[in-house]
Image 1: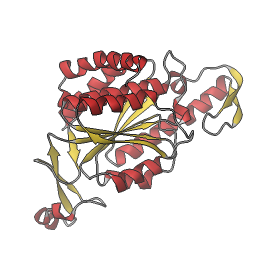
Image 2: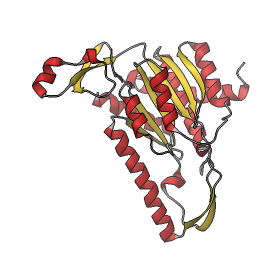
Image 3: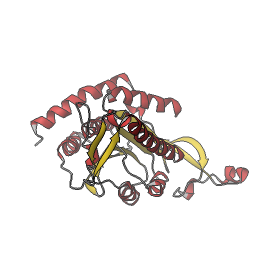
Length: 290
């Protein structure tokens, strides 16, 4: 039985999400399949892991390199939502923590996928795969999935995207589209990302707090890493905050460049803004681009 406080959260997100489903096409999250499908989309360069059956030999001969045919699938998709539950997400300078916003985003995607009669599944991850709800559809499945989203207590604190990406490669069918909802505080996952995007479309939903985007000039302050518990004296003087902000901004830019290189769309949601508006604009843009 779903607890009353969780039911209230689900009701609130349903109200917000209705704007997406009514004001914009719910099918707007067009999914590019990395193998089979129904509607031809484009011919593109061969990537490691592509099904050899979809090589376009005539085009490849003309171009002098391997090219494959890519398709769009329209219905009965499988959507896997991967939610970061590591300790870094339990931070917030606004009314809501990053984890709160990420839970709401997960719920909104699940509601839309269910409305489209898609199969939707859930993976909660930190530096291990903590919880898996296998993909399915229907009201009972949806409510069970949302209860997990809003009630789960994480076991681990740190983040390891390699664990998630390798699990996706090994455990789910190729035509699943993957949404990774995280603050993406983690490094050295390019190789495992390459493996998973060779088989599936990956969309990164990156949650950013106002403080991370605009560091306050507060002098010297003690800070603690929520994942490692390491305590550090931070220089947030005018010059110190500027230098640290440069490092944070450069990390985000390098990450965005990495995603772009591997054809991963990035949706940035901010804890001080209404993510529903950002959500609608993002998927409308995807519909135009596709």
